[in-house]
Amino acid sequence: MRKTAILILWILLSVFTKTHSQATITQNIIGENHTLHSNILEEDRLITIYVPEDYQNTTMVYPVLYILDGQRYFLNGVLYQNTLGWQEKTPNFIVVGIHTNNRTRRKLFFEKAPSFIQFLSQELIPYIEKNYRTSSKRMFFGWEMAGGLAIELLAQPKSIFSAYFISSPTHINDTRLHILKQKLNTKSLNEFLYITLSPSETWAQKSVDNLVNILEEQISQKANWHYTSLTDENHHSTPTPTIHKGLNTYYKDYPYLRFKTLKEFEDFGGIDALKTHYKKRGQKYSVASDIHKSTKHFLLLQAMKEDNFNTFDFFMNSFGDYYKSKTRDLWFNRYAQFYIKHNNPNKAIEILNVGLIKFPSSLVILSSLGDAFLKTKNKIKAKEYYTKAVALAIKNKDKNLERYKSKLKQI
Image (cartoon, rainbow, N blue to C red; front, side):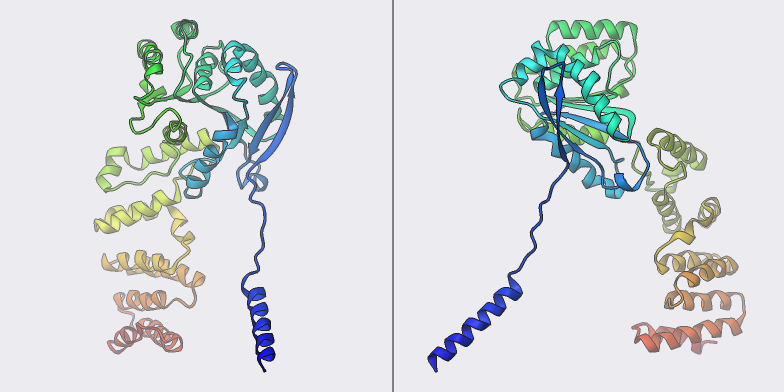
């Protein structure tokens, strides 16, 4: 008997283990590793490349972020866009991580900097642009000595990058500063600069101050460059906020606009300024030039919140068929009810009929159609839609059944 009980227990445990402990394990791989032989540097270079998730499904061209010391900071570029891209707070971009060796990077980024710059411009960038769909926008991130290298890159007669994110830069010597100053004497700065330093990095403060002084003296457009003191960071923690805040600043005109009040919208310049903004945004980022759907959504919502019917109706007319794209019946209902409230039931009926095609079993739309027809004094049509709402509410055991019955009784 005891052996039988043990056998039954063993069988049960085996079944339980097989039922509850099985798992499928797959590798979570981000990017691809490429080994690129450099004739200029006379060595193989390990490169990690990440393309956006939508890359294979589009024909778009993408900006490229080149990250030095990619073995450490490559994922920061990926993380930034994966965190914010799904909410359209940033455009997608390709990330290229350039791996380095601790023993050789010092010489490579300083003594052999001209050769490394040649490698970037003549070998790596052409390789990326031959094999991937890239735009003309190239971004560069460098920390410490790689940040100092960024200044030498910037001082080149023709800069190969359009944006530089420079974290805790060192080795900004007099030669590099002199060449940069000479360039700025004859040519305006078209590149974007985002430079950071922690107050604890006292050894780099003087050279960074010298750089900032040159930028302040030579550049009239402050918007092109930013210097930020990262008070809560240290020498090894500055890269993460530099990449994140730098990209935020560089792409500050990419997220859709949201106005907190209608006055803020008018102060912005109204509908004409809004159209101009999105046209420029579309040209800059190769995206649609129409006013963003979220901007339209929040403008309509704000007009309703402020109970400003004239502005609401103006937005509805200006945005054309936008309301038809709504994916929830409640928005057809809210827009229609606002028209009913302001004595325009016919427009409400027009909106609700579109909504009913998309949501034929929507109780709120059926009930609101009853409201709208009642407002036009068409009691026959009002009764028709209230009756449909009650029947459907009974069928679905809807919690608002009594409210629909009450409306029907009033006819």
